[in-house]
Amino acid sequence: EVKLLESGGGLVQPGGSMRLSCAASGFTFTDFYMNWIRQPAGKAPEWLGFIRNKANGYTTEYNPSVKGRFTISRDNTQNMLYLQMNTLRAEDTATYYCARNLPGFWGQGVMVTVSS
Amino acid sequence: DVVMTQTPPSLSVAIGQSVSISCKSSQSLVYSDGKTYLHWLLQSPGRSPKRLIYQVSNLGSGVPDRFSGTGSQKDFTLKISRVEAEDLGVYYCAQTTHFPYTFGAGTKLELK
Image 1: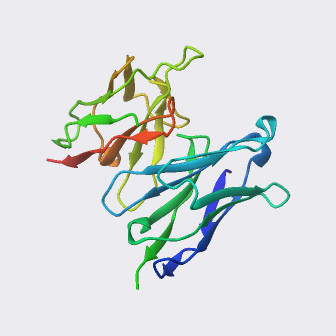
Image 2 (image 1 turned 45 degrees about the horizontal axis):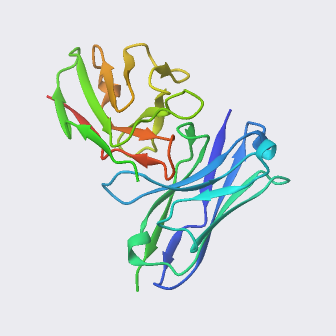
């Protein structure tokens, strides 16, 4: 059974940093592109970026809206996906999802609140 | 960015009724490989989005054939035949042809 489980969310002050994790199981992790998407309450999802699979060298693509502040990485030995978020702003407040091969399988999401 | 325009924003339906949702993109969604990367997802209340249809018309695993997708280039439609209670929620179209990937604003399907 495919499972994606995000963790690491919570409350952070503006200007702060946070790292989200996504634990993957039930599939061959290195075969898949892995995405991060966020969704502010009551709004549509926003794609943040992805990291490619082994066959494509684990390279990354980002939404310009977060490029330079957010970094996606993966640990293929642990089947883990990460999202490092820096210089956080109030508008980064959202539920953050990891997803396999958009529009594919999504995790249950983790909430991030940026507030003083 | 490619703008995805969904209509209507909301629909009120009776169980057993058929409905259609439109999604129009600001650019053609045909990729250089000839495929069209337009997808439909459903977000049931309190849940994460779930893939319904990928590449215009292909049903995701386990998705009932009451759902169907059609369209080409910039104009796409999701049809739900014989709506059931489990179909309620917000439907999103999404494109993964052009960077950055983008989503429509959603269509909320509610019970009449």
